[in-house]
Amino acid sequence: MTDSILYTRDGALARLTFNRPASLNAMGFEMGQRWRDLAHEVTADDTVGAVILDASGPAFCAGGDVVEMATSGAGGAHVTAMAGVIHEGIRAFVESSKPVVAAVQGAVAGGGLGLMLTADYIVASGRARFVSKYANIGLTPDLSVSTLLPAAIGQTRALRMLLQDLTIDAETALDWGLIAEIADDPGARAAEVAAFWLEGATGAFGQAKRLIRAGTQRSFTDNLDDEARTIGARFDTSESQVRVAAFAAASRTLRQAQGPDTTKEHA
Image 1 (cartoon, rainbow, N blue to C red):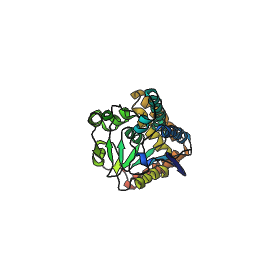
Image 2: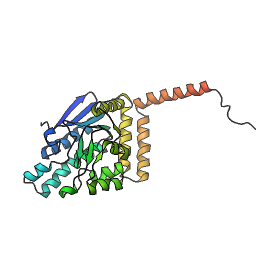
Image 3: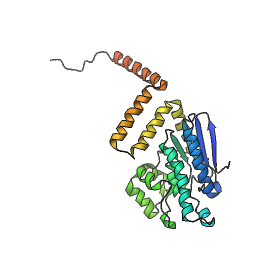
Image 4: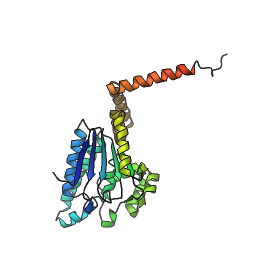
């Protein structure tokens, strides 16, 4: 086992930490394999209720390790294969029912944008910066950037970032919808978000995330069918039954306290 990505557990909370700070957490070949393996492990583990994705050092992720690509003797076929390995990990998280929150403390570049957008909720430091840099070095988007970036901020803004190497700050990222919020301590805030999921109806949060993510790839009819199946399955869980009963009881009490409806006109 390597330490390029640290994996820790605190009860139902799983934490993945990019841990190559000297390389700005750029994802090299070995790190990409570890990312895929951990993604499959975490998403297949029924004891995991929520995931935090964060990073060591001053940057969140500089994307793929271009220095390693250039000096390893790898050819295009090797780069394609490696991208496919990393994509497996991205797909595992995005398609899973595990809600993921990312804590972003610094620069996010290139494929780091796609890795960040693997998370369903992103908390960033006010010092965070976001940039593409693909075309500037003669490369094209990978690590889900061509899909998840326009899904988050719209096609026109995504094209501005990709075709103009536009760097945006945290305030702009918030305004565009690239991140969910800005915090002085994104790590602490991400922990609060994860705790909220775990203290609530954890399974329902995870299924809501899955439905939203899957909905962009399917027909409207398929989405409605999945919604119907999912809410029915959730209704039969003990977690839901307790909460639904409590909600119904509170609603009855509120209606009784309000008394009969006197707002209707009688003929």
